[in-house]
Amino acid sequence: MMIPSNREKVQKHKPKFFFELPPALKSVNFSCFVIGQSLSFFGSWMTQIALIWLVYQLTNSAVLVGVAGFTNQAMGLIITPLVGVLLDRWNLRYVLLTTQLVSILLSSILTFLTLSNNINVAWIIAIGTIQGIVKAFDLPARQVIIPRLLDQKSDTYSAMASHSFLINTAKFVSPMIGGLLIARSGAASCFLVDSISYLPFVSAILTIKVNPVINNSLAQKPQMWKNLKEGFVYAYEFLPIKYLLILQVTICFMGMTHVNLVPIFAQEVLNGNAETMGFLMTASAFGSIVSGIYLISRKNVMGLGKIIAISAALLGLGLIVFSRSTNLEICLILMFIIGMNNTLTLASISNFMQSILLDEDKRGRVTSIFTTGFLGILPFGNLFFGALAGYFGVDNSLLFGGACCILGAYFFSRQLPKIRKIVHPIYAELGLITQSNKG
Figure 1: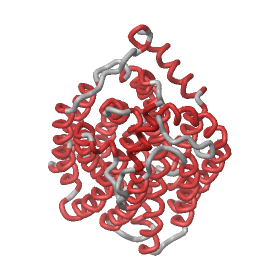
Figure 2: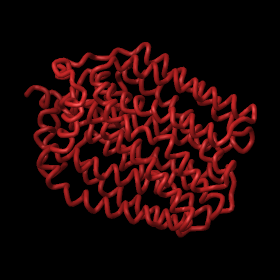
Figure 3: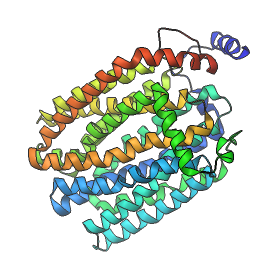
Figure 4: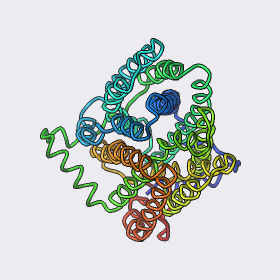
């Protein structure tokens, strides 16, 4: 009972600035980790952009762009739920160290193949499949470890928001630089930068302090399938997580796949080149930065449910209007709106989920289920929308995706009263200011 009162006393005597450093970033341990990983994401985004552009230039086929996107992430649907069980058992430091070293090797191979003119779609698909396996371990491990770097549980929202902000900062810079590098030096330069960008994160992984998990129930339950079932049952029965997951799957399948369609839209609708694609992706990433600043400026998780519903609806509306536009300047503004609301929706879902999940020994499994909703569903979305764009045009595909995002937002908004009622006691346990009209 002392925690809320102490927190309120501190807040009363804080000087009020326009922007205050989030509590989580005051921890050297957490800051070292999150800055290192944001640098690695900088290279990863450049490689993703370069691969999409390279496939389209090699094949001139929207369908094959979708196939390449599918193979890069399809393994996530198969193995990510099992990964969650393993992450609740394994040493996360070793997991992350292994995934970074393998990623360096894969990016180096892409660099060599491209420079030697031996790159082809078969190589891209093969390497993309391995990258998908690595991501299935890497992405959930990065999120699971974050609460274990903190001294106070109540700083989890601050940590997740800071994590999203720094990643989106890298996402903002990488398309702009990536587009210029592709246009002037070729895709190999992006792959080379990617292989180097993992090194600071490797250094961070080796130096951070990871708090141990106390009373891990998996120590007494060695059966993997039973542990896996526990994770799915928990996610299904805990209604806030269930509804968050449904919306995330909808947005990833119907909205997030616009990233793979942007290179086709830039060339076919706007009659542009790699730089045009870079400008569009940069506008989207700048929107992500704005949403990140908003999330990091929030004090806590309360009220985030309503933000999720609104941003999902605006994402759908932005995609619909973008699909009907042919002017580059207007498209840049719309891509800013799309990027802002896409990130605001998915980052808010992640922040909300991590903040209300108090059972630490289930964090790995629940996080992996959410990662499956991203890595596992996204490739099918890429495959579906690649085929849809091939048959009905990229503009009509974006229109359809936007309409479905709006329907998903409406469904989630109808569940908000239930969510508020359930999470209110959790806010009290975290020591947050409890208000019954927020959720």
